[in-house]
Image (cartoon, rainbow, N blue to C red):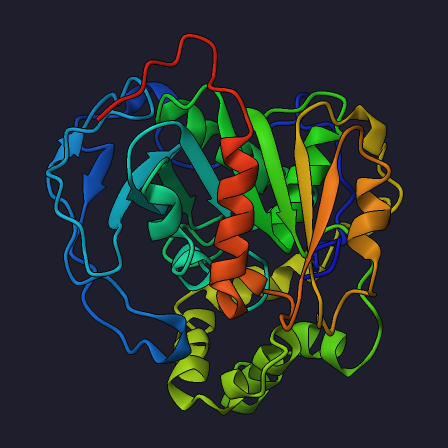
Length: 358
C-alpha cells in the first residue's frame, strides 16, 4: 500500500495520544482473554491452506512470549488461530513455534489479513522462533474500527497493547506494505511504543507510483473485477489474477461485515487535520535497531531502487531485492524471502536474559 495506507489523517505523537473506545478496560480481562477456536476451511488457490484445527482452552496471563497453556495442536498450515481482547477490541491472531518472538504485520490493501499475507512465512520462521501474526484493526477477523484523526497511530498502539498483554517485551518485527510503513512510522516517532529489537520492512516506505495499479488499490468498489485489479497490482505473475479461487478468497475477506467500510473510511480525514508526512519526510536517522529493507524486483507500485535509497538513510541498515516478485514477495517468492528473514534474524543476538522456551 501507499505510505499513507489510504489514511490521510495526520500522524500525531504515539506516546501522547489516546483514543477512547467503548469496551472493557485493560484491567478487566477475564480467564478467557486469550482463546483458541476452530476456524473451519476455505479454498486456498495460490495462497495456501486455511487451518482446519486450532488449540482450545484459555490463558489469563501468558508471562513470557514463549509460553502457552493451549494444547499444541497445529493445523495443516502450521499455526493456531487465537483470539485476544485488547482494550475491549476483539483481536484475532495466528501463532506458531517457540523461541524468541517474531511479530508479523500484514499489508493494508482491501482484503488483506494476517493469514492471507503471511501463510507462506509462518511455518518457516516457526521452526526457530515464536511467531505472532495479528489481524490489524479493520482487517481479517479483528474489530472493524476507524479513527479519523490518527488511524495509523491507533493501529500502532493497538499492536503495542497486543504485545504487552502477551508478555512480549522485545521482539523482531516484519512488516509488508502498510505493516512496514507502520514500523517505520513508530521507530521514527518522538516516543516509539512498539517493542522492536530488529525489523524487516518489505515493500513499504517508498513512494507509490501514480497510475492504474495505484488507482486499483484506492478504487475498490466491492466487486470481483475490482478485486482482480488489486491482485494484478500486487503481483508480478499473471497467475494470481487468473486464479479464481485466490481472487475470490481476497474478495471474501474484503467484503466481510464491516471490512469494506473500515478500510474505505481510512481515506477520509478531519477537515482541519494536517496532511500526513510523505514517505521521505520521516527522520530515519532516529532508527536505532537493526533494519533490513526488502524490495520486490518487479513491484508495480514502487520505483526500482527505493529500498537501497531508504536503507542508506537508516543507520547500519541494509537492503535486498527479491527478483521476479511484486509488492508481496513473501507470497510470490516465499523461499527467497524466508531465507532472507532467517539469515537476518539469526544474525541478531538473543535478548538479554533470554533462556528460550518450549
